[in-house]
Image (cartoon, rainbow, N blue to C red; front, side):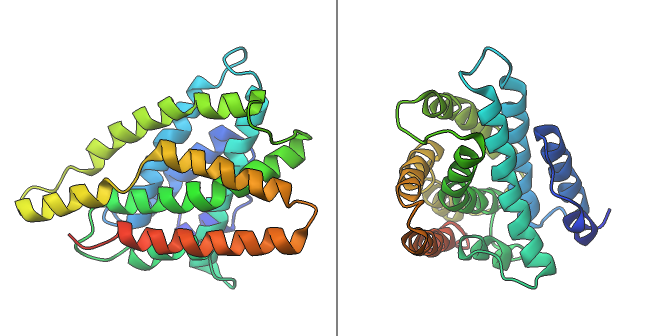
Length: 236
């Protein structure tokens, strides 16, 4: 199926549907497309979470599953805006979308630029939306926060594995360029990004009854994340 047809389809409602949509997006894109590299990493993470989240393994497994779908749909909406318009995608996603066909950028850089946009900008929004939908108070130390932290090792493990896959095909790249790539990749840490996302979600939650302030905070966060994303996409 063509990418634009996929993006016109209704948004997924279950984790299985999310992973299926990601695979379809991968298959619709050229091998060197930066969006494909990010989607490959994201699909691996989604499948790992789906496999791990079972009754009894988390305090609130339904919350984690709901969050996973809400979170993924923010990516699908951003990609839809980029491909179909008429609205522009969030600033956080602009670096990846603008550079997706750029030469001299390694697949792992595209993948991490997408993770930067998705975790640092989208995850706080998804947490607040999920808490509202599930009638849960977003609070540090609660069962949902404990489940959120419990996923960190799984994400770090999955990301490390897929990083190795995305780093293949760099034969012939000069040692100097590989050193530069290492410095770029070192900018990214999934645990720290998720910890910051929770803090930003707490801020949005505290501002939930002050729409103007919450909106301004979200806009500022969006722009800051976009700025950071450009640093991850330096040519090597």
